[in-house]
Image 1 (cartoon, rainbow, N blue to C red):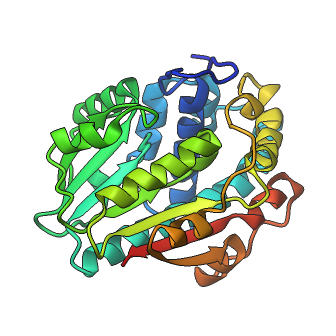
Image 2 (image 1 turned 90 degrees about the vertical axis):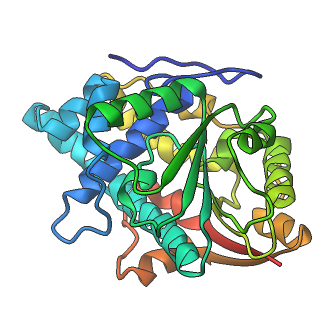
Length: 307
């Protein structure tokens, strides 16, 4: 299967082989590769089978070692730095949820969950409820595929099939969400795919739903969504000649954005931001010294507590 897509439009939708969904599959492929490292930061046993199930030929051949030697060498040169970045990002959000659970939070919401498998692979404390929110086709595919694999959630999983540009708080409440209890929220790799005003609205909704003690993890790129997409576009261009048709420039929303750290502070959150280089160093890793992902070094990893 070859990915399809085009420029974003209001109300557009996707599956995991088209538009924004293809990026979720690419990130899952990076998690699968990262899990195979000699000293892995993460262990995601579901990433590879999920990617194979999506059926994008390039990613399947990449994971199964079926690329021609010359192609594999070129693809590996592009995939390795992105794999390093995604491994650290994944570990950051993994640790966020585990730390939140250790603090007594038993309700978690994963926004734009994509092929994320935390509800199946993290050791959630008994009684934890995890909500996954994403496009209906994405939710249906992942739930069905993991069930076919015999995977079972390690928490009480409640999926919420709704577009984040729609009234997702109402859908979340209908699924049993309790806004009187502290919640751990993640918005991983999400903000650049929302228009600037929708980013603010997302944080407004999270704030309105968050009881005192709630926590939020996200990431923000101070150079803007268009600049961030350049790094991803460089990787995609390396892959394009081998059959992956993915134009990041058409997937993200440009325009001036409020810095997430400032906006959340104004909304009453206690915010801590760390540069990506600091996050890498915290895990004993060095940021990849390659031009392909150089602009990603400016991203800020954010953790916030609702006071």
